[in-house]
Image (cartoon, rainbow, N blue to C red; front, side, top):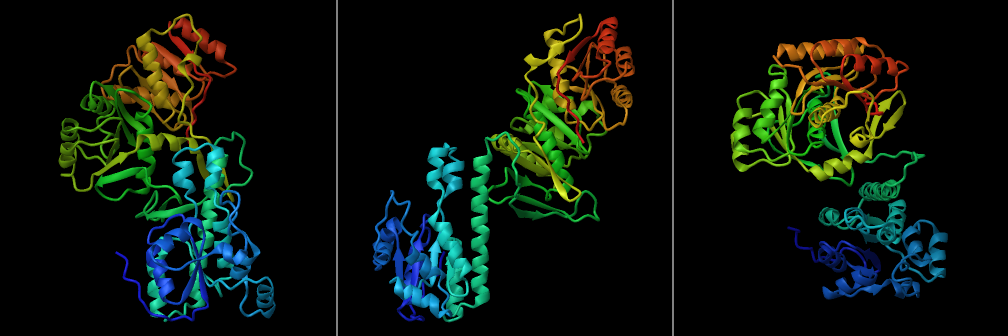
Length: 524
């Protein structure tokens, strides 16, 4: 609760405070404090009416400018008499003479906050014609003017500053130091920068052409224990005007590596309807299943690689219940992510002290996938769109005489959705219910095929009737021949090699179907 304002007159009665706020939180507190400490209150429109309702006298800005508000309030404070009063250097006689000549007055404090562009325009998804009405012009201009003249004028740009300002004022008997004024000025320039960035991002949202100049405005969310390795420092930053899209219900703080694995795990399951479960280790899927419920999908995911899943990140696309929670508690897991957990599930899983439990807002997560990826290289930044959305399966092209059945097509679609989350060169084997084998990160595609087959065999998973998915085309026949010997029924890959026709002919010879997606999914 705000402290009761101190009714002490520190300053002479010719001091003036200009107040114009959209957010009227604690307005009564700051207005009464300033008035009771000798400030004449100057205000505009709705703010003036609100201050009047507190029983305080207020001078309408039009009395100073001799100009009424025009254009439905768009122009009210944009006037030389106002800006002169804010910008005048008290130590420069010519400034004071100019101010007297124009019949204006010095302004000592400005209390201003801005139109809520984020909550009104962005979050309500207003079209441009309506959104521009929430672009503040006068507010940022007056704040910047006050901040520029910080040696003479103090700028309060948020209701959150009112109490600290009052404490400072009382502690120093109204004599706010230049350093303290500069601190408030820094807040102003940070605020107006963020405000303009937010508007710029909104206006650039629907453009398909590259942005000529890139400005990034992120705030520190958390210092992490360390980076990818213990000797590396690490932090997590979030967009200045954004909030976390997850809630951590339990467990240790997230590590640097957790962030990557969680994003991959949840990205996979949110591609699927029904009950889906993915397991990630070191940014690669080591398990995936679709089932009748979360318990079923989890057991299928675990069976992909019953050894490697230990210490993994598990994600679901549905509410986690007590049945699957009991099963997961039998194993060591780093983190479990889902849209929701039942109360009983949380109670069960909290028995593991360090197990991280996170809920993630699905809509916010999927919307964020449109924002793209940035990566620092040399003295620059690379940008690319997220590779999270695949072409419609109707655009796939069957290249062989054999055509996949509906069940086989579901298998290839599942494999194709998974292979793009495996480090290149990437190979996966799958059926229509689960991931059967993974070959990741090899320099030759045939080695990835060999590893995927080896992992399936190690885990007693039969590849008969499965499909093989590849993140890029097959330049040679060796991978397909080896997979065919292990019982696959078909292959899905982008195509695009100069050897495509010979690969298609081989598939026909082996009685395999082959589907070209015409979309590559390298992942580094």
